[in-house]
Length: 118
Image 1 (spheres, one colour):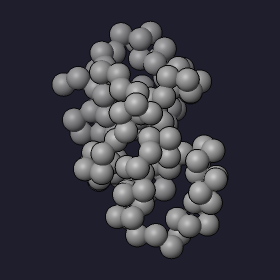
Image 2 (cartoon, rainbow, N blue to C red; image 1 turned 90 degrees about the vertical axis):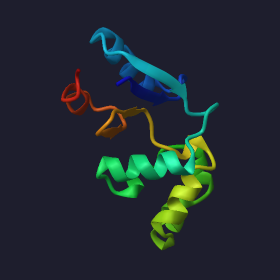
Image 3 (cartoon, rainbow, N blue to C red; image 1 turned 90 degrees about the horizontal axis):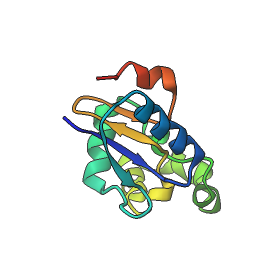
Image 4 (tube, helix red, strand yellow; image 1 turned 180 degrees about the vertical axis):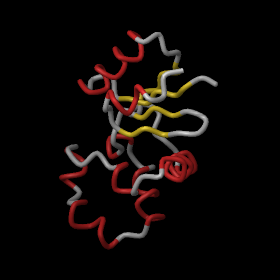
């Protein structure tokens, strides 16, 4: 199974994650989150597979997150509404994402990623 590596190429954390994958000879399919936004069904599946709280999927340091005042809006939203919102713009989604058959990693923490080396 080919891993999916979903990132924003200009993001330094994504660049570090890509270098780590390359340095460890891990095969992956690259996808630019800005040009190919995750769909609602993809996000719903990844969220279910990740075991993480839905808020972990938001790019809380992003300009769009801040300009939309999501810090104050998210607590009143349903999970479904949050997933719908995430599917409207890739820049709202925390990145990079590494997606395998039975796992989804959000953000780059080398120790977490190292557990999934093939």
